[in-house]
Image 1 (cartoon, each protein chain N blue to C red):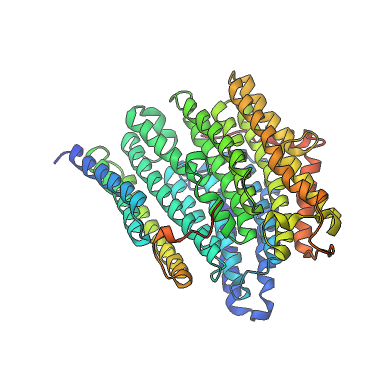
Image 2: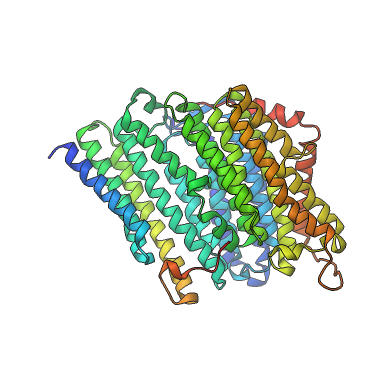
Length: 101
Length: 470
């Protein structure tokens, strides 16, 4: 297992995440795709720290921050989803079409 | 050196935000308006503290995690000024639930504290964390009218685009770490290579979403139309300008975009942003949406300063940023005053001059300033930015900018035309405007007039502040 393997997995995860976030119609699906993108960055950070820069802890620190912040972001997103679901009874983005112009 | 003292204003503001939240639990609901007063007084106090502390030598803290130089102090002042004015506006905004006044004030202050940390950050770790602090609080603020489906929808779109852009930026930061071995901004210079350039582009895309640059601007009109008007005002000014401050720090100073051949990309995005913003604004019938597209176009003008990348461009961006706070908040304040009674459609402005001549005249001032008509402050800012483009030999960018500002006069004058040359639907009734909205408008008018007609004080201030410590 070399650095290239890890980076390939991370890039694939990132691209799957981008593809999912752009094509999913359900809010939960989009949220999951965005999580994939965050986790691709975390894999990158861990791999870089292990293979290229084993002397410091900057990569691991950043990965911890990313996990925490991503969790906080998802909490807010789900709260917003609950609020909008109460008013519209749907979790599909194509049904949110009040704002246009 | 830890130098935590450099961040005292930011930390004090975050502490005050917590205090507002705690006060919410103690105060009886009938006194909930005190919380808004507490919030804006806290922001104004921190602003005074920063103004009094100006002129200290630039220093770095915690290795090079944060930096307090005159550039960051300048943008902290614009951010705090915007926060004070927006909190004043929210005092007279009726749709905000009175039960959650403390939460609202606290979130505004948290968002402001995040922006202050963001303009001081000289390490991508701090950039990321503070940007998320800003984003997460703004998502909640945008959806604050919980029973209003428009507010829900705007907040949801804002959230999805915001989270997506953060993820792209984080991936860029992870590549940056791989190339440079650290997240410090200054360290990247020693490690040129394709991975670093890819990282810089991805990070730029992340910032582009927050600053509403053209291919990444789709959330802006929806989020601005749906959000409560004081929040729209805040979003259209403070996060945008702070993002530009970081852009100037990263792509103007630490990594000169000329060296990485990113200038063509930035110039292309700048002209695209201006054009898309202005030409879509032609077709809007909602005042908040129209100003949302106008604020996209304004971001395009600001980006010219970055594409040029000279010291004159930097001064132009700072100057325009300061002026933009006054004129944009002023315009939104009038929109709120009108929209609270007649809705936010453009037809609410019909015959405003007969209902309240003062309000119609000040709105005309702000719109003229946004369009860049000579004696007002907006003109000086645009002049500086376009002059920097000509000086650097990118005259075509200046031409695009001038053509765009001429075109923008058309849609700004659609509002002016309605205010002065159309009758009201029925008898012109007087307009009731809250005292705090008047206060915010007065500050904005003072900014537009006093920094436009004699621009020397502002130019001198910007000159003195345009020093970055990379």
